[in-house]
Image (cartoon, rainbow, N blue to C red):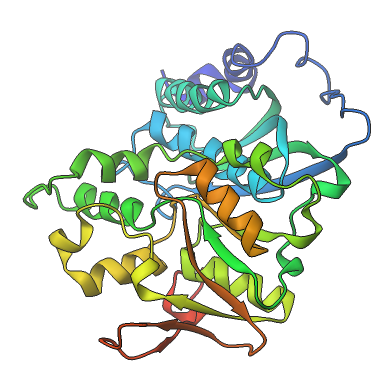
Length: 324
């Protein structure tokens, strides 16, 4: 059965089964914001053929990624989730089973992070479009902003970058000889994990912390933070969080490019005082690392302290940009 045959009301009835019964059914959802906290809202739109495709992403994975992208934006603000709404644009010829599988993946991600699906909308569209609004809450003193970085702070990355780009390459070219870490790369692309686990570990006063998520790439995140804060940065090439085995598979140059500009790794990039940064790294372990420091000079440089590679100025033009 396709969406046209089932009809709008029939489809909504199926999708409401993925929501808490006490929340849906009216014109809007009513949510409680914890006392003393502020509401954080973010919206993300994913379009078939731009953000996902049948070549690389199952409906379940598309749903998971859609939820993860929005939860990651909440984490980047220091917020914990209250719920999400989903707006769907669907062709009438799309199979209903595809939509149900999308919601199975979406709710699987939400359940992992104790986040309810609290409503949404369905409209006819020539292309599959998923628009998610995520709602979260945070104490005003713990809000993380891009504009709060100060010169001399450590730049922390909560995990490896480039694995999602490697996974995409493997999915687009299945004939490629699989590398040793194929499962890690593919899982990083199809089932990213928003770093909500980092939020409780941050200092209780976040005014000295700047940050954002790295969904558009590590270099993009560093540049955006520095621009908003009026600072620059000096990143050390040897400290870049390159995934295990990536340099051996594609070579050091490509591995570095994918780490800086690959995108969709959904880690957090944070600027904070060095003592707090070192404590956070010790708590997180794993792939978390300090990659450099913020500077008074406005440019962002990738440097090689060993002197084997020339310094490289990082720019937004090297990463993905819509309409470019």
